[in-house]
Amino acid sequence: MANIKFFSGEKFPLEMHKVKIVQKLNLIPIEQRLECLTQAGNNSFLLKNRDVFMDMLTDSGVNAMSDQQLAAMMQADDSYAGSMTFDKLESKIQEILGAQYFLPAHQGRAAENILAESFVTPGSVSLMNFHFTTTKALITKLGGSVEEIVIEEGLNPTSDYPFKGNADIDKLKEALARLGAKKISFVRMESGTNLIGGQPFSLENLRQVAQICREAGVMLILDASLLADNLYFIKVREASCAHKSIREIMLEICALADIVYFSARKLGCARGGGICTNNQALFERMREFVPLFEGFLTYGGMSVREMEAITVGLTETLDEDMISQGPIFIEYMVDELKKRGIPVVTPAGGLGCHLNAMEFVDHIPQTEYRAGALTAAMYLAGGIRGMERGTMSEQRDAQGNEVLSEMELLRLALPRRVFTMSQVKYAVDRVEWLYANRRLIGGLKYIEEPKVLRFFFGRLASTSDWQDKLVAKFRADFGDSL
Image (cartoon, rainbow, N blue to C red; front, top):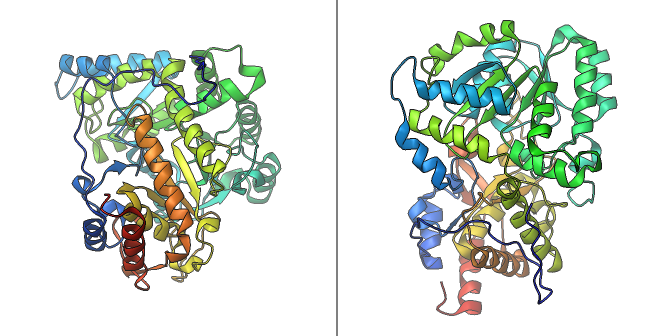
């Protein structure tokens, strides 16, 4: 990985790429931002992108593609069946991930749907280092449930522990003994655990989990969507892997799992996904769901042009300079906010910088969606669209009661190779201003609440006139600035 030091002694990440195509951005006045936020029901998902200055909602499908990926898209074979483009992608999967069998899907949650339909039964339990929203929703829809076995350190927002996404081995053993193998649909390890701050697991921890699963006769599934970040962290944080190449680490990780699935919107930097395995019986069990839900077996709902881009993107995942770009810019943003005394999740993980809303706006009742309120305030402060990762992202229990999240986070995603250093510094500045005025931020309440995945398209209203007060304070501090 590039090791760049500056004569001045200043420390910041250096972009290992140059801008060749640009997209114009708009920064509308704060009064207009308030109108847009109100129309969107205080839900950042419902904002129009034309009204967003920095889109830090997600890294899913919005990572910058390379010139090589764009060039490859022009070579696509658009045959419905038997496409040579599929053959290229399948061959790359076999080379990079070491999996003989590959099933295409249009994105990660489509792969999760196939896995749930194939292996989840009513009353079954899925064990996870930590759940993801769509994974859990698809399992509970079929009558299954989720138990989390993440280490205690994983739920501690402020820590120096390098692998907070590790599974707790004692919790895993206890769950296996208590439930029995027949009741467990699978154990799922998520790389770069999304809901607890993009925190990685170690290779050694995955080895231990895999061994226990083999001995118990329980299937191990790896969500490799954020594997690129996890590979980087293993390389730089796990001493026993410092001498290994990214290719070697990736092959070993994938060999430990019975099934590997991924969203190529993250891994591969294009729009698609897939499921991989070396087990023919598992492959055949899942295969029938691809034509049913996705499309034919050689495209699975993906555009063939995107498939060409994924093939190149997987190769680029082996480039240490490429996979480091997300984590080092996130680390810079986290460090700058820490210097200012602003509560953020540490150590810096992958995917984005995570503000700890539990502390940032501790005066707001958790039932009024702390992280959601902070997300709305962040858009007002800077035209920055983040994503709530807290109670809004949970689902109510069977009796309709609110399930309070163990963590309340505002995720400010940093898609790879998208933002410049000046834009990152702008985001830091607006977070700092918001923190100084945090007592002005109030809560939110649902006015339209879907029963499933409510954070995607539910609508909320402020519980007071706090947004008007925040706008007035912005004008008092910034004058006619946008």
